[in-house]
Length: 129
Image 1 (cartoon, helix red, strand yellow):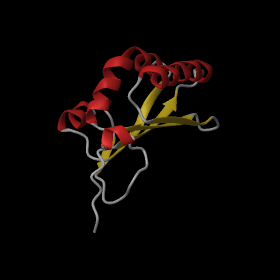
Image 2 (cartoon, rainbow, N blue to C red):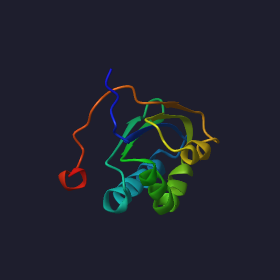
Image 3 (cartoon, helix red, strand yellow):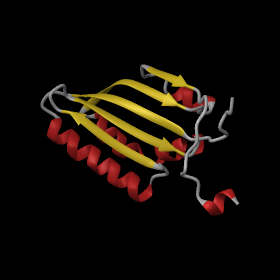
Image 4 (cartoon, rainbow, N blue to C red):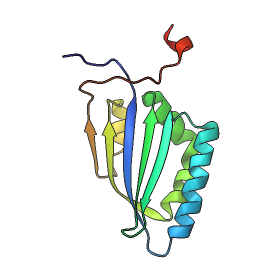
């Protein structure tokens, strides 16, 4: 069986949008994603919302644990603004983050699923040479 050597880590964050906060949540999450697009280390960020159930899902793909630490350091004000309008229901982490990353997640209902097998096409040629 092939085990990939990719260090990528995927977060799936399920959030319950607070009643009466949908518009504010939309504005805050759009600002956070715009900031991440401009300055964040994420390889990918996607947010989906089920307005009927007031549940949102955020997917964030990181190159490695260092990228997660960088994201948390740079984006804290944006994260805090989003959290005014929702609560985290569940966090799924796919990959193998460093122990300090896992320890920092202790306040959330979360699960970590280590990588079994796979590939990605996200590598930049100059970094892999």
